Amino acid sequence: MPILVYVLRIRGELALFVAIPLSPLNLNMAAADLKLAACLCLLAVASLPMLAIAECECTASGDEDSDKGRALTLKIIAIFSILVASSVGCAIPSLGRRFPALRPESDLFIAVKAFAAGVILATAFVHILPDAFEKLGSPCLVDGPWQKFPFAGLVAMLAAIATLVVDTIATGYFQRAHAKSAAAVGDLETPDHAHHGHGHSHGMPALIASSSSTSNTDEGAKLIIRHRVISQVLELGIIVHSVIIGISLGASESPSTIRPLLAALTFHQFFEGIGLGGCIVQARFRLRSVVTMALFFSLTTPIGVAIGIGISSAYNENSPSALITEGVLTAAAAGILNYMALVDLLAEDFMNPRVQNNWKLQVILSVALLLGTALMSMLAIWA
Ligand SMILES: [Zn+2]
Image 1: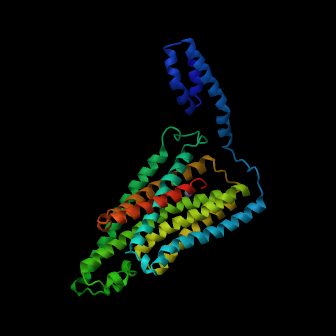
Image 2: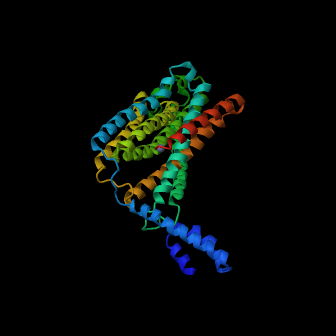
Image 3: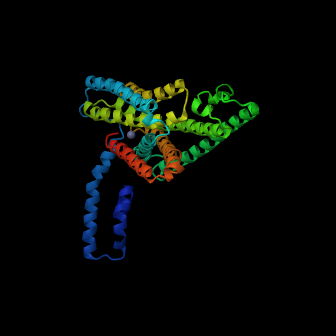
């Protein structure tokens, strides 16, 4: 009997599953228990081929229905449809500013933001974090400490803490810079100072710059600075996942794999575009910065697809280096987006006195949040 346990133990995870029911056997070697042991043994042996298959997949394997010509056509279609979908998604919140119902102060806009935050929350919890655990826990990573410790969780946690630190330091730095230049202007401060006084507030809207109260101006400026930091860190977190899913599409040679991926990634980038666009609008960047950020985000997945096409012959997603690189980056992105969605986006709006004093708005925000998480979670079936 100890031999059986030993044999099972060297099969890794399976040992845990079988060894626990087996341990009472050492105390009570009744015939019924032996029968049970035989059954478990049979079960273990029967599942060995499955483990062997998992091991075989570590070497690069060709797709079953590989058709390079058709695959390339689909990949080029994917590049353009994803590019258009991300740009449109990103632009929707910005264009909304032209309609009175979608002004940043309106209830509808706060609801759109809750939806967008839900999309980002689901991206972090349902898309990125499981992906990181799968990559860093892959049976193909036989060497090193990867199987002995949940590194994905550790990296995600450290990334969330790092985001908090960056958030604090960057916001503090810009606030001090603002205070210093405001003090230099002193009592002579005019509504116009925001446009000429110092670099970072050139894009400050007339609404806040022309506000009669100086303290109001400062509050508004601080809020805008926070939103700028948030939208830039957010973009950083989102692009990791966007590039990797692009690579996985570009590296595939089978049209039947690419076709559903194409549709899923188009919606994927569309919703994430809305999420990012909602934040960019609040940061009130200059038009050029808005376009740069939107373009940068829109290009990430198509660039990933292009990289995938370029390396499709050499790329093996189960090679240790690909697994570790993608796993660590993905885990870090999950931590960043978790922190941002919960602290910077959701808590900020839900704890706002205006929302706290209006139960109807609370219900609307909750529904919008759940809708965003539901749609984005559903897309995790494909990508
Ligand atoms: Zn995804």
